[in-house]
Image (cartoon, rainbow, N blue to C red):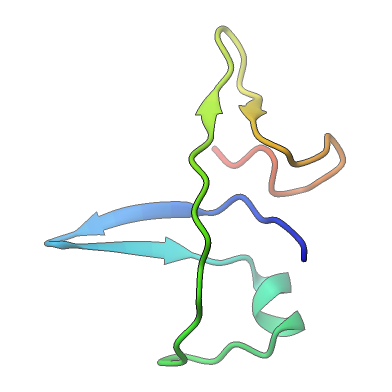
Length: 65
C-alpha cells in the first residue's frame, strides 16, 4: 500500500479530501465512488517546510504547500 499526502478543506459541515491524479488513475477511482481512507495527521517540522510523516524524501506528495 502506498501512502499519499493529501490536502483537506472544510466546506460547511464536511471535510473535502483532494486525491493525487496518480492515485485516481492507478486505483481507477471515479466520481461518487465510495473509498475507505485511513487517516494519519502530519505536522510541519519546526522551522522547516518539510512534513513529519513516513513519506520518503523522493515522494512528490511529501511537500504540498
